[in-house]
Amino acid sequence: MTTTVTRSSTDADPQDWPGIAFVPSGPHNRIAAALAEKIFVAAVNRLPMRVTYDDGTVHGGIPRRTEGSGVPEMRIHRPGDFFARLGDSGLIGLGESYMAKDWTAPDLTAVIEVFAQRAAHLVPVPLQKLRGLYLPKPPRRERNTTANTRSNISRHYDLSNELFALFLDNTMSYSSALFDGAGPDLLEARWEDFAPAQQRKIDRLLDQADVGPGSRVLEIGTGWGELALRAARRGAEVVTVTLSSEQKRLAEERIAEAGFTDRVRVELKDYRAVEGEFDAIVSVEMIEAVGYEYWGVYFQTIDRLLAPGGRVAIQAITMPHERMLATRRSYTWIHKYIFPGGFIPSVRAIEDITDRYTSLRVRERLSMGDHYAQTLRLWEERFLARLDEVEALGFDEIFQRMWLFYLCYCRAGFQAGYLDVQQLIFDRRP
Image (cartoon, rainbow, N blue to C red):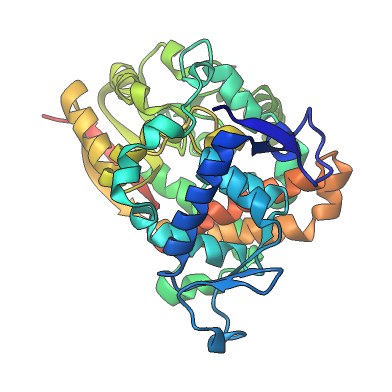
């Protein structure tokens, strides 16, 4: 039996969006779709949410009498297409079916958060053990070898500087901010708080890495240049490396405008190819793009480049160690559409790898997952408010739904506690 495809009822361009324009079909898929429906219905009937169909069918662990009470609601409009995609590729199909409008949600983040809180228990354990037999596997072309990494990075970061500028603050920081407050106070974070919170995050990393006048600083992952600029303002000499030609171009423009071309050098280079000796090495949310097979190489490279007495400051998205082990060979919607080749480490994995392969040790770490949830909320609000401008840049409705799903998917992970973000400070063991 083989899986074939039929044309979706969406108006997706089949060349741009083959996974959306076509729906899996055929005898094999009918069996997979039926099984997916049974698993899905059994799961949602245990969850604090409601799933409604256009024909009036309702599933979920919330009694019908609570309708309108504000519980998360998922609305399935084309159940046949939805379960065909889910049966074919699991969570990739969940995201693709949202992009295709097979289902919608008044509060997308709330729906995904319910799933994220129970991610380890949605599928029966015997079927989880068989996931490698029926779910898609990571393509070899997306492994982060030195030959592939440039392409992987380009697919995301070279989309358009103008696109990122529409929803990022004026520091052009594409990572978690560190707001002035905690707990319920974070929920009050507003756009005017954003740029200072991004600078606070950067300054803390630079402080912990002892960056000051004359420091030789290596930044792995340039972004759009804000960290390099702030280090240069302290009197540091900075080398910053990126594999995104678009980021390099804009970062160099910003550095020139600020008058720091004599202190900051931006290089289009793989981190593995860097040579030299640095007093401080800083990397913000770049380890997630390394790939778990290369974490050892990543930290060995840092260890090789760090001067005696130097310090390392890394900001990293993390997940629980057990979930990391269970999913490290999975191919997900995020891989296919957002970050090819990426994988999120656990803190334990980072500590084990640095202990085994390097002279580095973790001296301090700060957990700030709640701050990332609010960072993503502000990005989402800004993105939704500027959809007309997104479309004017040439990004169609399917892209817009994809990007919204990405922002909400990530935010739900942090709100559920499935994801965290850490600032980790390293020095050398005595």
